[in-house]
Image (cartoon, rainbow, N blue to C red; front, side):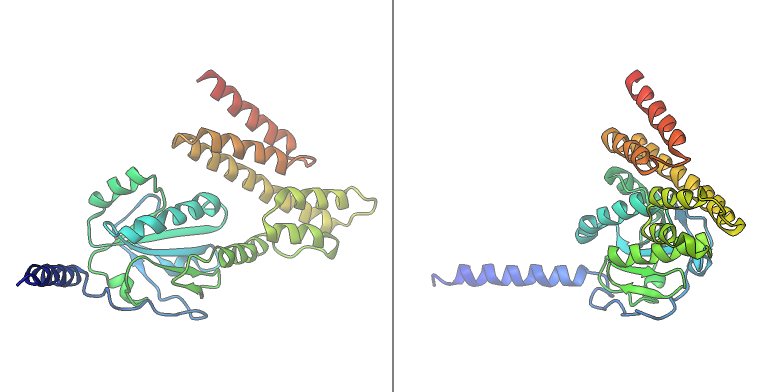
Length: 284
C-alpha cells in the first residue's frame, strides 16, 4: 500500500494542528469589541511597573492624557512584531501627552520584565492575571489596541491609529494652552500641530508690535512657559535614548531641538543643552 505513509503523515499533521488549537488560550477565538465613540470601560491596574503606579485607574487620565491601551501576551509572536510600534509611539509622544499602558496577560511581571528589557521596551506595563481587564474590551486574540481620547471616549478600536493619536494630542495641547486672543490664531494652530517653535515665533512677533494688549502678553507668557516644558521634555527624550545606547538618535534630537526653537526666546537654552550634550559625547 504505497499511499499508507502519506496517510499517516497527514494524520500526524492534523493531530499537531489540533494540539496547537487546544493549547491556545480559551478566549483566542473571541473578538475585541468595537467601542468607537463609547466611554472607555474603566480599569484598575493592580500589579504594575515601568512608571505606572499600582492602583491607577484608567479614568484618572480623563482630561489629562491621551491613552493607548495595548493588551498582549509575553510569548505571543504577533505581539513581538507589533509592540515595537508601541515603543515607537511611547518614545515620540510619551512625554507629550500620550500615556501608554500595556496590559500583559498571565505571567507575573517578574517574568515579563526581562523580556521587555531584552527587547528594549520601556513603556508602562500592568499585569492581567486571568484576562479580567481584557474581558471588558472583548478579550480577543492578542495583541489588541485601543486609543482613548482626552474626553475618555474610545477613538480607535483594535488599532494603533497614529493619525488618531496625533489628532487627539492636538486637542490635548489646545486644552493645555487654553483660550488665546484672536491675534494669536497662527500660534494656536502651530500648538495644535505640536510645533512650539513656530508657535513662539508667531506669538512673539505679535507681542513685539506696538500696542499689544495685556491679554496677548499674558497668553504669550503662558505659551512660553509651556514651550519651555516641551523643550525639557525633548531633552529628557534624548537622554532616555542616550541611556539606551541610541547615541545617534539622541544627537538628532538635540539638533532638532535647536532647529525647532531657532529665532525664539528659548533659542539660547536649546543651544546650551545641545552644546553640553555634544561636549559630553566627545569626552566619553
